[in-house]
Image (cartoon, chains in turn orange, green):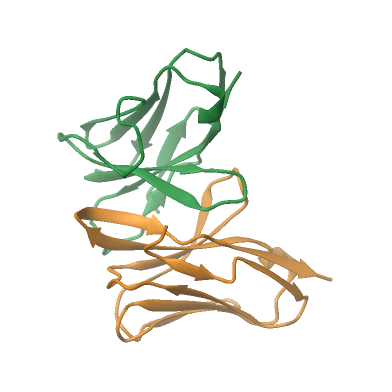
Length: 112
Length: 116
């Protein structure tokens, strides 16, 4: 989706290292979601952020939404092989109608 | 959490035939459902937004006559791929929500369509 710019599109890190994925929009985001997916399979919900400045953590994954609600980051600490997959940021935007759109995705590979 | 059931998970059809994909919210009333298409190694591309009882809103470039969407009830939306061709082969996934923007969006398991 051009409404959401996600970066990087591909990321290879060594096991144990930290990493960050970013999601940026020129529009105000009404609800920002992070999902994980294996291609051809369903989406695994990670976190939802709604308020500007909000930060949530689950196990080794932390997500933040900036004060303007236009940028979010997903940070993984001490990465493990189980973190490998495709990470998608999604958000509700208003563009004519109300829409739930997604960024391009980040393919994360964890090397042992 | 809420459950969205999408059926079938896989379908193979002959070129020229039509295929219907169902998306059901099992334990909540979905006022809005979204349909996505996913190409290999790409993200989810929003095809259309459907609201119960009204016509679907299609994204630019999506043929509404080819991808028919019906949201006849608060628990069921269907996507029909009409006169399917091999280029329609893809992964289709639906999402349902009952409160726009303020709650988790729930996804079906997806449907892998192969047109031969």
